[in-house]
Image 1 (tube, helix red, strand yellow):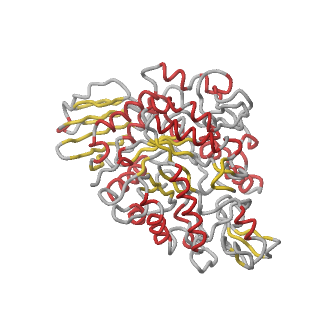
Image 2: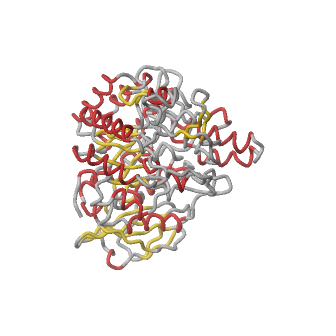
Image 3: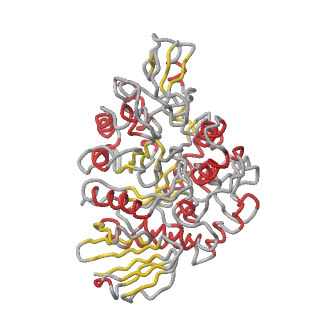
Length: 549
């Protein structure tokens, strides 16, 4: 297996709006990020993935871009970006940009021109039809919007202010490649590519018969007929010319498809984000208040670990800007168990094969927010979901509300809790979204001072990954796949082996040590125990890692 820096790196995702506010307007900004680079360096990460900072009217919190080569005024200036990039590089930290090119904002100059007439040079930069089909958008309602000026419908798989680009137009592709090259020449270190598996649509756009989040349009817009052709072209024209980390967001992708996007010899992307382990489809679509059974979660992780091994590279995450807080979702955010379960989850993820991604605040064990009413939400998806399910009368507020609390993307978007001063030290003004009231108990200042904190545990996990190539490149094997409480697996590289054992329950669990690991060296554990024994009683949410060879 070829060794690469991006396989050995640990990535930290920043959602700039909620990271650090430098000027008191209640919105995080680039100068705020620059002021916290030393904090990230101390954590030990290598790469910062920056959610969009481009000029945007903010219909979808920056994922609706009106100018790819300008900075959103709320975040600062291009000079502020250049200073942040320079200061990051001085500290040995790389910057990966969010590439959002399935769609633009309807305020982008391309779309402003495209909607004028069919004679306009930009008329086919987007997908126009005289009649609409039955496709629904990801944010609710139809995926088609009628435009009065052109007397036609345009496709928007997300918000109506996010028209989909027509990637079948070679001029569109060249515009995107030129823009990417501009950022690479500026010195950035890679791209995270938003819904990149949706850029190619089938020529025929019939009514869809599916259900679920991507139901009607999924077969025609996901992993489309030319997606690999276009990514190979992108690689040839841009990506291959620089030493970059590239990760594609590919919802709905299978392991076989992932090997095409990120295969060692495919010349497309380094890795993809798949969402099978965090997707849930129930009677309210993605909205649920139920935790996934552990055997099911293990089976998904094990499938990706084994099927991609030696063929394509895994990305590892439990948390991001589109998911609820990991400790509330997969662990236990009760104060009695929050820290130990946050450490357990981190152990389980970071000992697997692939590049780990840490979402801001995850390293502090931040939790879901106790929203009290729909007025508390800022996320367009959450607002539309409440309208679709409750305001339409499909389901009662009391029935749907627990699902909103558990699943809303806004759980991840509350500001970072830096200290125990007002607003958690995030801003001196009024924050754009409320700070979690538990900031007095959970904050970076307190955790930096406590050697036993969640922060320092993440620091140790990152250091171990740098010390042991086995953690990066070793082969994965699942043990006890049907156990409903324990997640156990081994990693093997040459003569070295690791055993990772995680108790996902709030009850004690008995565990019999595999004979070859009896007497093994404990690299890390979140509780104290004698791991040299053959029979162990594991405390709630206990986790440990043994090394032999």
